Image 1 (tube, rainbow, N blue to C red):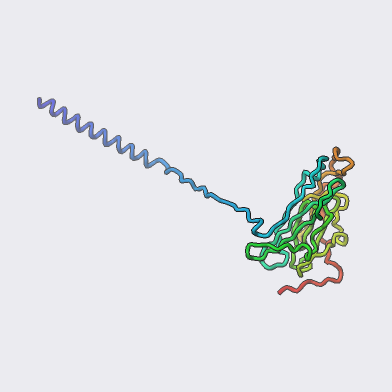
Image 2 (tube, rainbow, N blue to C red):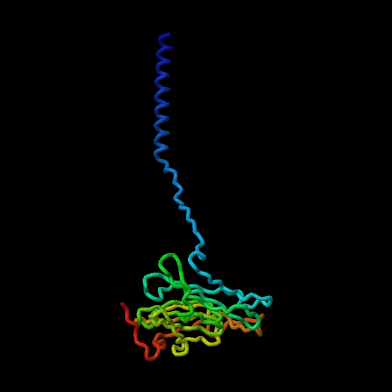
Length: 246
């Protein structure tokens, strides 16, 4: 009987020791596990405030049953602080009427002045950047003459337009003088950069396909896919002094 008791005590001690070892191993295993990653995603919501901001511009795709290539292309938009008041303004590029599409209203691009209170004012007419009749595509912003005011280069079908910023809230078309019309091309995008490090922005213009309404089912790659225009050709309009900055 004493042997059984001793054996029972011994068995109980062994069992308790085994349980302790098992619990220790379990705790070590838990300690080695990486904590569950918490969901760090942040829910972001955007609200369409176009109407409350006073922006009424609507891009016209000039859609017809003929399904011209022009109709497949959207138009661009750019942020530009055109009057250097520290607030970003908006410039929207518009299409134009075609030989078979005649909209009831005149189509024009639009410049919206940032009022600083969450609203914008259409200043296209006084700024002179509507480009009526120009089938616009894209837009590039850059101060090509280093006068402190950003200028606008608007690409498009048939030609492009360079608007020089006069520094008084108005722009002037200097395309012909600057030699950057890309006449007869279909320029879709452009970019300003100083490729030769001379301190003046140069211009690269990217063209799309050769196309006309008469050959609407035929297209071919143009011989000049892109143009690189040096800033030495881009000069300030004659007899125009640099605007005074306060």
